[in-house]
Image (tube, rainbow, N blue to C red; front, top):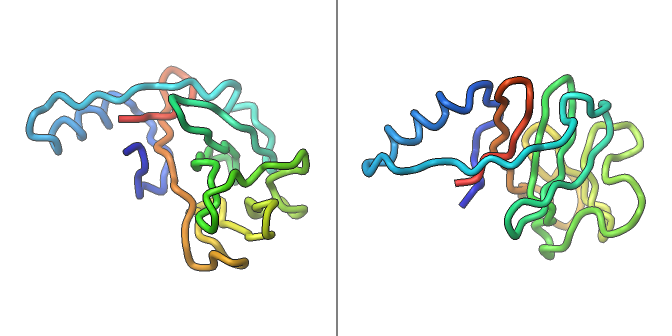
Length: 138
């Protein structure tokens, strides 16, 4: 599973891979990298979708940090962005689900209001290498 509980931007993919190899007794664990196009130039308060393997991720930037979450609301496992409206709320502070109006913290994926209050979006690991941002999937 690609989901992580880490809440910070990984700044060195090699260091993360070494940590995972140390944690994994076989030492054979390697991440698959998926480029997040133009992530560094993403304006604050906007989001876009990245497809990797069979998953869809929402990528956004808040306070200069890149965040990525699986594009599924924990309420009914439907994509947050099923309509053409922005998946970011009007103030630019929360991700919102278009099905039932749930709002999620961008920094940790917690639902703060709506039918899934207290549950979380699945956060993906984001890595940075040579100025490019990547989704890192095991």
